[in-house]
Length: 346
Figure (tube, rainbow, N blue to C red):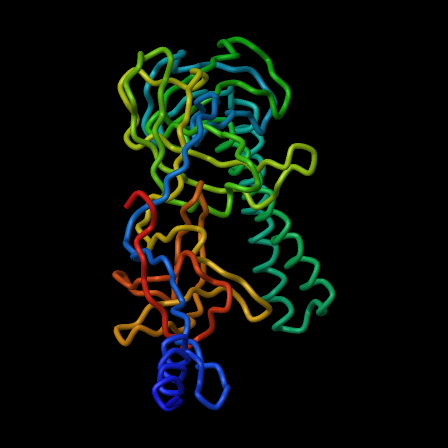
């Protein structure tokens, strides 16, 4: 019986089964690394929250007197508008004027005495001590005149800025001690409200960010506002910080003390957005894997920003349009050849 045909058939069978004729198994083809990709696109992550507060005037001062005495005139009442420098209150100044007249006469005499002592000293009739006493007396007299003139000016109270009188607490004929609260003056052109915001949101807010303000007394109309100031301290009990929001512009009918609701929003600036699953972190920092045209991936260091749901902002390190890996990280390393696949449902 001829065995050659049988041996050939066995060799063919072994080859078909993937076995080496010498007995060594054939090496399997390299496994393809599959990944899902997402495109880095510009956009905004917006978070908003309503906070309630009360309107107040940014500038509000109490008008108080520096001199005691009798009020002879109060020229304004509540709701009166005044200009900067306008006279608001006058006190009786007759007594101080008499004292000023006396002080000015004393000054004239002191200056004459000083001039006489100077001439006598030059001729050797009086010594330096007498001249020094005359000089000191003249300086004291001048100081007394300056003091009384200043006190006289304090008997007339003027508006420090243009505004509206909100309170009147004194009447002509009243005799008041020093530092009595007489009037309250406010500037209605700038109204603000203070709201408390969580410490987690404060880093996302900046001075100048826009806000929406609703004033209950004025209906459902939304009025534009902006963040005027962010206080530096956080309340350790509530973990909230104070944010000052200004109406810009102030709507007609808005008044200090009115109840308002403020909507603050973060994410008003545009950044690159990615799925949160694309962002990775290790001991070096944050990074993503970017898919290149040659089918390989490279590691790119990035700086992330706000995170909301399954999206995250990338503040730096990535260009718009870049394709980043979102799934398939097991065994993935920079320079590895990958094959993109579509995500389910895409």
